[in-house]
Image (cartoon, rainbow, N blue to C red; front, side):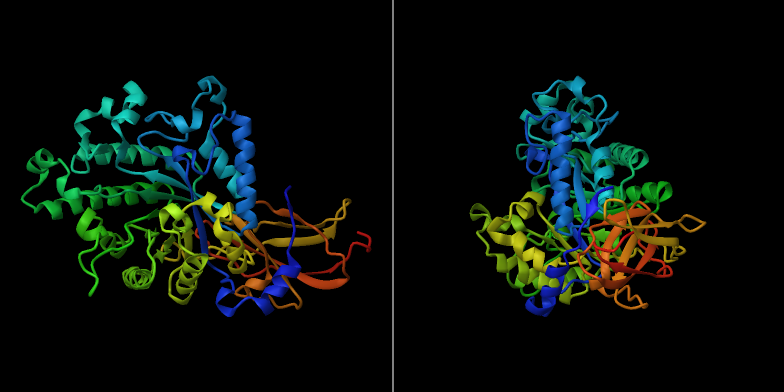
Length: 490
């Protein structure tokens, strides 16, 4: 069992020295996009399976320490994948320069899910939807490429291959990919990237498809309907198999032109993403718009997304990569100001592109995030899917084990609907689950944890709650009073 240590001093000092706007919320999505394309976040090139696993565990440890609670693991890149698929080939960024045989017993998506859950982190499969790569990338895949196997479903546009959204076979093909992932993996969500027409969509070469399947619609209406048909198919498939699996997407940050900011590149007008309709009809559980803008653009478009949310989660995607000199040379304050705004608004958290930019402490941004994410945060409940909380855990015990660690264990309720647990520590017999300062750990998948014992004789009360796959939380169990001291015997 992994050892967890509470940062009591940091947490206490934060109340005095960190500004009010930086205080944690008890329920908040804190996500990162975990990029496997080009080996950007993981894995480093040339590593063996064991070395890849070790590197992944190290990165997840750091993300856990940063109180990140959601990871978008890039499972499909450009018609190549990071999981054992019967449909598409392995990504070269997974097994490049290493013999395929060494990977026979290793599935990176399954391993990432397992290791995320050990750390109280949700793992969502990040799927790049329509792009298939450059001609060079497609050629390297040989006969296994989507272009080679299904040439009638693909189009070459602006030097890149794409699946043609207007071909009905494309939807069927992508639904098979989704079915394979959802059926075979214990994912918490599936996150769609590039679920739209490509850049310079006005030049996309689908005249033949439109003539065949357009059905009297305008080109723009037909294209929007093509993407929406896929989204609807995904929703129906996923919710029938595993209704708790979250369906989300990362659309263009500007949904539509707003006065007086017109003539911009937008999701609805430019690339035919009718995300507003997807939210209105309940086809999406969450949207993570790529709001990689500064100044007033950010605030106005956050507000616009929230106005369309229909009770679903809007979590702005923040471009930490923009801190790089080559990507805009932003200041850390540009990012923290955006976090402040998301917390003032009705958005449900923040998502960062990408993981390495956070962990590398680019321009000290991780240090800044530590002042925002002092405490762990629970995930917001998906009440539109289910709003019935599970029963409370039973028979909690707290004791000092033979190695001196404070050990907390409990039993699940009889109906065993719980999937994760949250531990609270308070100074009284009352537990306010909305007080983020009392959260010790959350997202726990086991019924036993060990905490490093403080060298003090302070008495505290421990509580445990249970949460289901929809993040509905039970009332706390009956508390246990415990004196924190290394000197006292078990």
